Image (cartoon, rainbow, N blue to C red; front, side):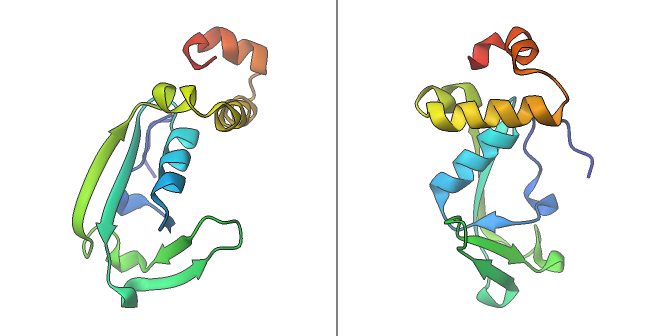
Length: 118
């Protein structure tokens, strides 16, 4: 996928989805510290090939050939991760730690690079 680090991917490139709007906001901000987007859409039941709620995420997998083309009423909402995390400190801490670790950066160095997240 050709995705800028820190940005949400386009709906047509997405791999999994959630039926839970608040979970979608959490994941968008968690993995996209710069620009986050949440897409809402309707999809035919027949295009859902997998559903699980094992981690309380209401996760669905959509047939790859359906993504982006067969979605109905697609809406895109831009989110500000900094604003989102101000009211959600546990999620913010988790996201920051994950981002720092994934980028091979110590948390202290990450704090210096992005003081607006702390």
